[in-house]
Length: 482
Image 1 (cartoon, rainbow, N blue to C red):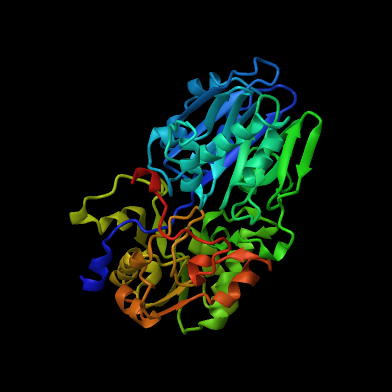
Image 2 (tube, helix red, strand yellow):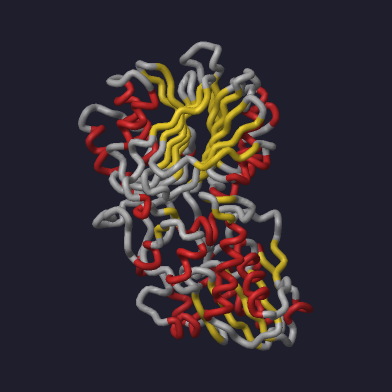
């Protein structure tokens, strides 16, 4: 094996999102646990390590919250018997992948706090860059933490502020003034459902409505799954409070200059489901556009354009539409393997990709193939897939990536590794091409990203190093376990 490839190790290299959040308040008093379950099911792509649901009855005792959470996928953690025990007409749910805080049941969300003013149920998507500092301050005032996630820091600050202010939404606003980083929050108090988004709008959060119920969710696809209609996105910096009186909005934390907002570009490239709409931009359309841009900027003669499933498929279609080269299917994906599975041992690690993906020999044999993928992180998976296409008889393999090269780590909820683990760091495109064994290689140009996101202000720091918030001086991810 190529020594450069061996240096990176063979393994799972797709990036993962931090979390997905979901909340619902049914004004007619119907139990909402099963609806939350189906909403989380639609958001399962955002996290597969753990999940949880917390519900309460707005007409019942103020301090009573029913909660169930565990490690694994939604259909593993929740059985019909479990859901039947979760009674309440207001609730929050969460699916998690850990980018900060270890993968343990203690770190599963939602977090439920009992404090002097009642209860709080909190689900959080994102990462705070000042979480260690805030945590240490709380510890020195006597706070005892049950988890190693920054979401608990947020919950503590809301609870502490609530003692000083008349409403929970004002407590959320007070806490937001101390938080730095990415956060989309769904919070359940005894009589209110609250959604909040950081001022930069890193992570998505939207509002939906079904009959006499209002919903908050990370993505619009979750609304469609439960038969709800999309109302609008929560704006960056906005706090929305849902009560029986309707929706109230607090925009005091919104940036004075909207051009400084910083939506995560990788929501459009990879994280979000293609049938979702993020801040008015269709994710599917964004990926089609990325493929079109690749065809314009990096044309090559070939017989077939194929996408690496799933997120490469739409970009491949866009490339085919723009170039006139036939679009086809080259890969069969094992539908029963999620993003987490029992991986082969190091000695047989190459088979990990083959467990998930097989090549249709009849589709590629003797052909010049353009292979579209959403990213190259360490390069190991790309090298294996290129090799699989060649083994199946592909005459040429030209790789096109619908994102620029990763050069910097992310501190806002994406598990982009440190620079020394990124294949593009310190290497030219030609050197990367040689490592992965492709006949040609091109990445999407950084100048195309803004158009891909419909002109909305974005964060592309993982590509250009321009962080919208001053990054920590060292990698703080997992800092609480050190």
